[in-house]
Amino acid sequence: MKNILNAVPLLTAAGLAFTASAGNTSTITVKGSDTLVVQAQKWAETYMSKNNSVKIQVTGGGTGTGFAALQNQTTDLCNASRKIRAAEITECIKTFGKRPTEYKVCLDGLSVYVNKENPVKELTMEQLLLIFTGKTKNWKVVGGSDAPITLYSRENSSGTYEFFKENVLQGRDFASRAQTMPGTAAVLEAVAKDKNGIGYGGAAYGAGAKHLAIKKDDRSPAIEPNEETVVKGTYPIWRYLYVYVNPEIDKGEIANYLAWIRSDDGQKVVKEVGYFPLPKYLREQ
Image (cartoon, rainbow, N blue to C red; front, side, top):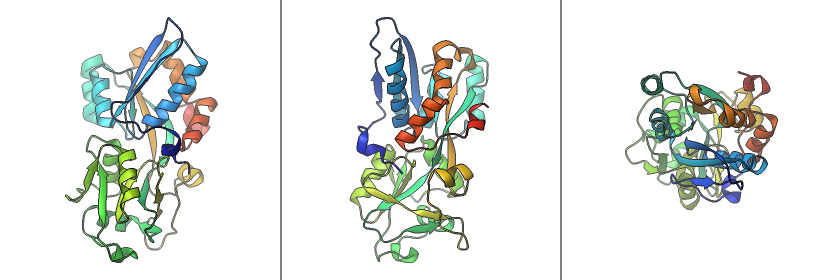
């Protein structure tokens, strides 16, 4: 598993703008998931290096923020770490008359991170539920040291927050003592400094912390988040990452860029960042 924070500067919701070298440029705006923001940066840098008539502006802010911008037509592309909701589809239809087109762009094994000094190496899905809902408060309950567990979570506009809540916490609320962080990079930074910390985020992150192997239940093997287990679906917390676009503008340079992202060249960049490429049959859907 690669650690993108070692190689790429920390990005915030303010994001980055990438400018092409040519005088006459087409501009593509991209906004949304903080999980995808570094991946989107690398896609943009690579694509513009080969297409100097295109300017791609990338900002984060969270999946919910991205969908709001898509609805308001203040972004061309919305990066998302969860599927679009029915209410968000309705708002898009109100604004531009059509359901947004959904593109799967890569796979992620949403990882659970602890401090490198933590002796715990694996947890079950039930143990995660009990920890993040606040029922389990001490590491010794799950085989660790006799120390309180510090929870680090994401803001509620985050698709990763919503995915974790739905798929790990089974819709239950996070413990009120969970500390809300503005992005996955901030979660990892906090866990790396806190020997009692635990957090979650995309598989491409992880600098300064370690990820845990996850078990579906007590009788199941502990599974590492890697390309094989994520593509096969044996890792319990895998997901697709998405880009959404108004179909009316899915043409010209925007269509070319989306096609390139899902091409062999675009998917090579996925591996470089640390996420997992889409199987070829999914790229044609």
